[in-house]
Length: 394
Ligand SMILES: Cc1ncc(COP(=O)(O)O)c(C=O)c1O
Image 1: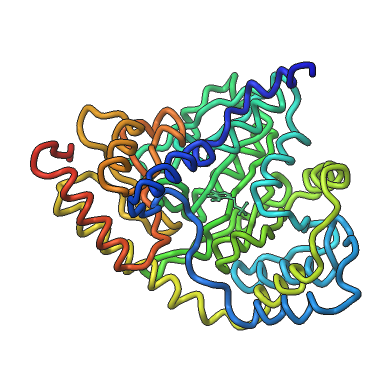
Image 2: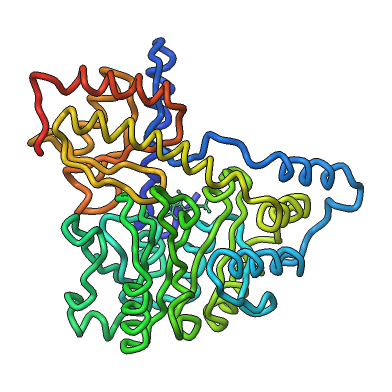
């Protein structure tokens, strides 16, 4: 067989996929691994959503192909959720494209928008798909640095004019993975003005807007005036409604970008399973009362972790949203060395900061997707590993 395409050299296997055999090997030896590396919600979707799925799935007429843009009712449900959560009106016909999870849309939108040589501005540290999909499209990813002292918001004025002129996309993500940083509406207004000035597409990844703490409400980028002219937003039920395995999300906003994304999807997939659409409609339009107590659960978990890190004297960023606590590695250790040593010696599995970009080196990400008792156990193991011999930077 001839070799794989040259551009595959831009896509090393995703770090978590490469970690899976290591975890299996440790478990086979009897180690109790606590998986704090992945942000996969451990709590179930609301019961009404499960009922909607099963009631639909047993109907004989629900098993054929569905239109690439989903059903009108599904697009209307996304519009309903945006009106309720953000006061944003969307045209369900032209401003909503349902996705098989937002990751798929992020990857495909980049293929639809980026020509070889185009610059793609991506946050570092950040969700790695923005950068990888840009490389795969032949683009030039350019890292926009997120610093703790700015609350992990980029300083857009630091982007060199020559780079901004060549940029096609600017990626943002708030509440932020991996740092837990959040954005104000005025920051989004600034980003919209930047996109207008440089004639680029602002892409906001809103995966965590409904996972927030301490009473904080996360805005959509589409709340900023004029956003639809220059912005698309990626959303998903993975985190908002504990439906990560269901693979259901949407891109909303700018019509031109969405038309291009839709066109790619007509070749890359053939729609989604209708019962999942029907359950997603229930998720978005049904009772939302589970969200506040669910977020309170995450908040209690976050507080357990922050208390342990404080005891250890570790530098960390108190998150206002998303599913993670981002904290500093022991002095002098690389994030990969630290996470592998911690995993091998204690069974606690964290995500090394390096997988989120150069700026992530020296940091690690801990996911809040396990019950309190498991987190307590993980914190005890972390303390045993780190104290007193190794010590943390503070
Ligand atoms: C920032 C961010 N964006 C997008 C995704 C993808 O979510 P999904 O494809 O499940 O919608 C994730 C998943 O962890 C994420 O953290």
